Figure (cartoon, helix red, strand yellow):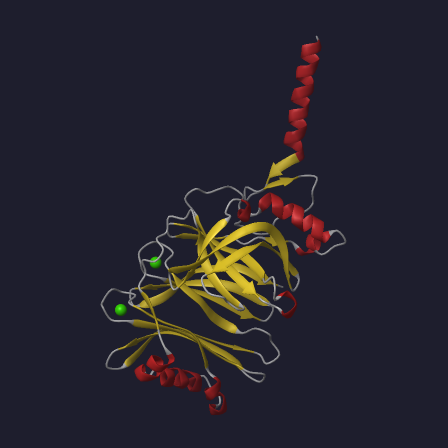
Length: 327
Ligand SMILES: [Ca+2]
Ligand SMILES: [Ca+2]
């Protein structure tokens, strides 16, 4: 009799546990009694043995943290073959902004962050390893009205870096690193090749007054043979970022007898916007075919988004938009 009662108790307890939790449509386990919910449609908590995690690594030295720089590790996407899935995690506003918001946010992320499973990363520059990163903890990072899931930890670079952003993969990733042949471009070579005047012409075509053309910043410059024809393509990220005008142009050029613009993106932000437009973060091979893809961070009015582009059959097409944050 005692055992029957005990058995009934155990079954009742198991039923209670089953009723008290449910799995949402994304496969994230959310306790029914906890109103906090996950808004991301793609951040799942399961270790995917095949998927590689692409993260952004931001080293930020502010005046009050010179001794201990603030290091952020931000998941961008899970890569499984040609499939790229958004890996970011947002904390829903109404639950995040509240009296006990910090605690609620932290508790939620401890249950759901991909960074619980992916801890060690290789930090890359132009496809080659330049450092490592380790997740020590998962934390809330606020941006305007959103709370985001980020890792905080150590980002160890071969050389000292001031404020900058890099991308890289988890160390368990089977993606080949260092196989891509990406070359750097010096300012003098940019001038010799005539890329600087080509870019000036682009800005003029988009009605940027001549007075601003001396303010063009060449923020990213690299050469790569995208299509294996032994002729380089040039990947250029530029911007005019002043108090009165804010325009960015990123482009891929091919230079033969005449310069060919393979692809370009132009963005103009309003004067009162803090957005800076398109910035190339890096060129990284996402699918092990030794041809790097172009990782871009777009920032517009109260919005930041990561975009990945692939060179294919003589043109460049978008293969990922996501890991966005903003209001
Ligand atoms: Ca080529
Ligand atoms: Ca590739």
